[in-house]
Image (tube, rainbow, N blue to C red; front, side):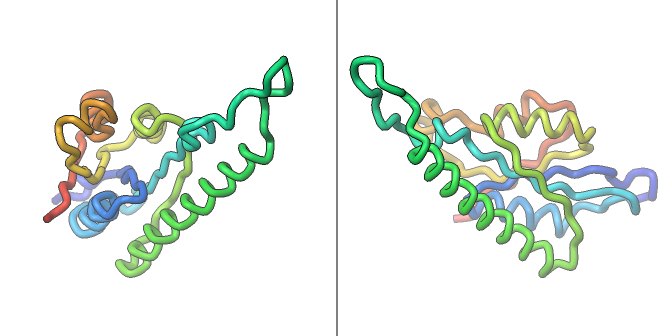
Length: 162
């Protein structure tokens, strides 16, 4: 590969799945960066209200609807999950002597990954694929499918092995 063909920015999206870490490992093994290029690991947290998957319930008769302790507990738990994911990804990178940048975003993973790819002017997006069945995929959607249809750069979807 000639010097001017090397990639300047590669984004690797990671979550708590082994498949996403396999995507990271694939990028480390196969991507050739330009000398000034960067590998950016991004993780997207869901907003606390979505992460909870439930609402502690409204207070009847017009009471204050916000439950600060509940929201704070969800946010603290999400930070611990994010820290574990980023720490694991950084260990994989350190084991491969790779320098990377990290970004943690909050919102809908499909939208935030696409926004980050565009903002970073990425040359490649690398993602793992959980291979949900058709029913689960219908309800949850496929982040990798969405991103592959909404970003302007090539997308490498690394499937897990059984």
